[in-house]
Image 1 (cartoon, helix red, strand yellow):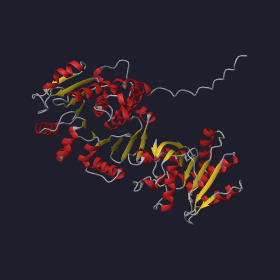
Image 2 (cartoon, one colour):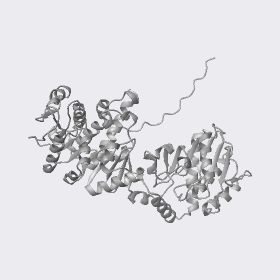
Image 3 (spheres, helix red, strand yellow):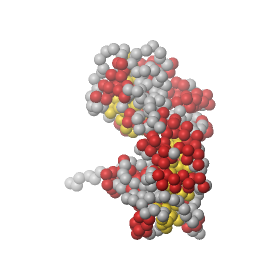
Image 4 (cartoon, helix red, strand yellow):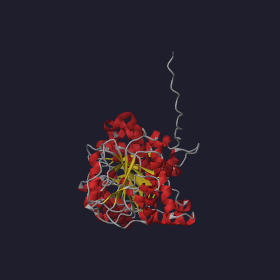
Length: 518
């Protein structure tokens, strides 16, 4: 799914009106009607008090359309207009006149000075105050109104985006943003729904189709894409009946140190479970017996040192190499990794201490093959690119780093983001159960196993993150968040692959209630 910028949405509105020969007022009517249909399907006429708060721009116009339809369908509606300015949009004024024609209970004009209307916890608030076009600071009275929403404990439904939240910059004052329980985003989700600092402003979201021009939706290239099953499925490469292990590559996992051989075990198991034909682990001598006994499918190569990686020499021909899990940052390990990079030409996945070594010796970055994948957690990312002011600053720095060094960076989080050159790919799978030791090692192994099979590194990163999260989503049904461990994610990878081809279950017809026997 594409995530359009606000400028692209404006252009989409314009093109739609032009091609479909409709006015912007007609398009607003369409949007407001879709919002009403969504509410009506769920409320079925329930007489819960609904408080619709409208701004005086186009977001407020959407709110007025909604209010009008709620009124004409017999709902218990109170409409309020935040009347803090005289800069009303044309379409707002049209719909202000229309709502006055269907009810004697006209919208209440709030002059931004009086007391706030009473809102009870069992009521519903509809936030149609500010949309994506907000370009000024929030008035103090409006900020207090937002705080009133929050303290009321009423369910809050935001139209398009929670008021006060920008699509392209950070929040300076959390009290100056509506905290929504649900957001109905028009045409496209917003990037801020997926960033750590701003996702909290809407608990859930849903996209409403408002009939934008199909050609515009299909052909417009976006900087951000949202990745779900439909986006990864076309990348899946099926297997031929007569295929054999030699066709699916050889993954080499280099890492481990005394007490951290488990990281290599997890990554190696994940690579094989992701589909690699062969997997070899390169570890210090102390890891030999642990790996051979716990993971018999792997081949094991040992370093000359007992407890750490001090030289990287092997006589196999791997397809892809992963480095860093559990490796440590000993001076001899750094030297060995540096020497390895000078001669390596194979695709690389670098995680954990491999990233820490790159942060210590940034001159090594120029030795990385193009499209090398880096998978840092937040602290490792900070060491690599430096500190950032906010999530948008972070993404800009990551994009600049990716373009400069021609690498793929996977930003781990609740919605992990894969960054390559000018594009961001936002993942939608995964859950808090992945906040556990070794989950990053498993992710490294999955991505390595995919590259081994011939997936392009970018496709492997996007697909790997999706499978990693989906496996955890399936496993958590059996284990819950707290008891989920990284080995479970590997064990459920097969289920994640199978889920790619599962069709949604059709809704069941309601069963007739049994009549009591006489």
